[in-house]
Image 1: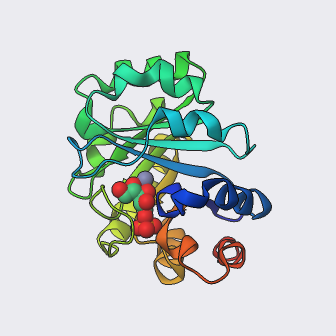
Image 2: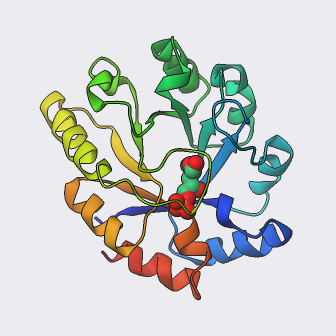
Length: 216
Ligand code: DX5
Ligand code: ZN
């Protein structure tokens, strides 16, 4: 099966958001990745509900929503109302992660847990079987277009081992600095899904770039 590609809307042209989403609709992109930032957990602010709530009117692609905010549990109802398929919360923002994961599932979404670059995968030992996906950050969250942290490849490999050992079904997604070279290494290490922002949207032909990522 080919790798799942989730272009990040953070790198789209916000003056032409409809045009960029229609481009993704015509492409082989599997999901659309939405980066929500609060200026507290990460040093940046992106976009919020007034924008996201209109997206489902113009796309049928599943929405993969990545919350880089403190207390993400406060917004589970609002994220569910956006029609998001996945709700990604950072392990670093959730002292009661197990409860948050159950609440996300109760609202009909697929729970995913996200790890910052410094957070070890072994902290997932007692939550892995409860989540549908683990999102490994391969840059420090907050901005698109950053350099890939090479160590992330080993984290993916270690997480893949843990998933096989526990017979868990969680997908492995990786976010940050994805290009043809890093994508190949991540797929070889066991990644199932890749987020790609800058690499897709700054390329001359984003539809072709997405197609080629899926062929790696
Ligand atoms: C970073 C975001 C990413 C970002 C990836 O905080 O979580 O989703 O948009 O961007 P690229 O692919 O440009 O590194
Ligand atoms: Zn993201």
